[in-house]
Length: 427
Image (tube, rainbow, N blue to C red):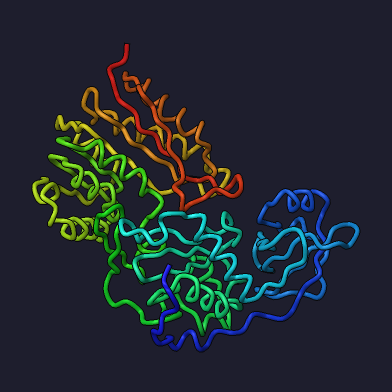
């Protein structure tokens, strides 16, 4: 995992505040207490019975049961529906530098051979709630770590968090990214000290950061790119597509930074056509292809690309008689809220119909969902119903989920699901 780096600390790090010393005494409802004992990482505002004294974002909330015994400790956020993000259950525990180091080291151990691998140095080190650190994500790209915050409750603790990460992971640089609502709602002093895309340690990268994924080269814009610069969660599925692609014509819809495109080309695809609504995403895909042109299979692959709406592009391709041996459909999340679930399932079905119209007889459909509110069963049902409407059948259906660096620690943490299926004519 590397030793402690001696890179200079950026100015923003020197402005970090020490963790708040204030502790809040919190009482919760009986139902919330039951869920906390079961290991749930969230306490919602409606579950809080009392807080003493009045708290601010980042205070440590000590939760007591009916007998006034310690149950858990977490980060308090008075302005969020998730009022407390639980860090520790069971016996009392001091939340300090030693705590963070232990948590980060344990997360590294859960990732097994990925940490220190010569084949892959792009992976998620901290997966928020699923690693016992709600609202905190840390992604590794080579020697650069990207810390992404989904709650302002983490601001007062950043100094100790970064110190612990440097000691455990030994990065050259640590970059801060903020979730949309955190960046929008941050208030002084945090809004003056921390902004999206700044360096917490080392230097701010001035170009996309190079990293490896299963021996392929990629570059991530860790300062301005989506999420932390690259979607690391599809690594295993991209490798599956690589193994399916020898001699194939492959369509990569919602290609983003080209992870599936590059893997298909590296696997020996005859042709790969990348589609995305974002012109910068298409450009990132082209650049990632260039990073792998030393491979004969990538150099020999015919790469086409289209900037446009996925449904419209697939409709035009079908009308013109285009067909592919492998079609990959990897859309963004469609269901951020419960009421969006029915519409999301309809959207997955429509995308599946559009994709199935392009799959050659005996070809493969690869379709995924990154919506935590959509269950794997409902997602598969939506795609299979689309197949029935399209007059085809799905055979040899394989379901896949999370990789080792995206562990599932509670029910809502299981967001990624994908299917690989052979498409054959219906009866």
